[in-house]
Image (cartoon, rainbow, N blue to C red; front, side, top):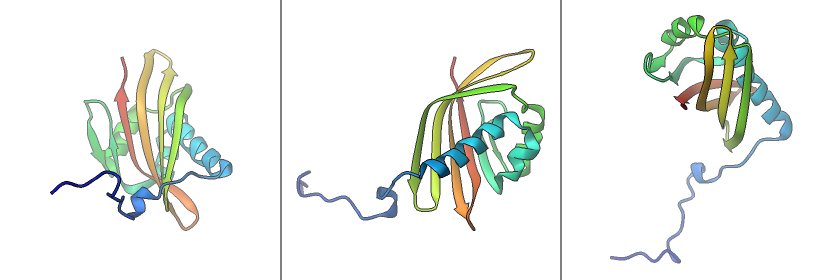
Length: 137
């Protein structure tokens, strides 16, 4: 059986109905993401779901829940962060931010990575449910 591309229709699944956020909501999420980098682990924890998943370059790799905060306490506090190639995708109550980051702090080489964070809007507030970094050399 062959299916003609002209006659094949895309399913009406919710994931195919992506959109964008208002400039105001985008600003809120980008501010949260920047503070995730520069404001320390306590701020990151306040804007992240309890059982979130984060993927960092090895080591530490894949972390979930309280494992994240042990790792981030030692590796937060970047003094400057530049996020470029920013993109936002929305699907219902979820938003995905993707970007290229260049982060700097004293006595550490500049860190460059490709990143993605997924946020869930619940009770009119956004919480990070996942974050992923791929180091760029």
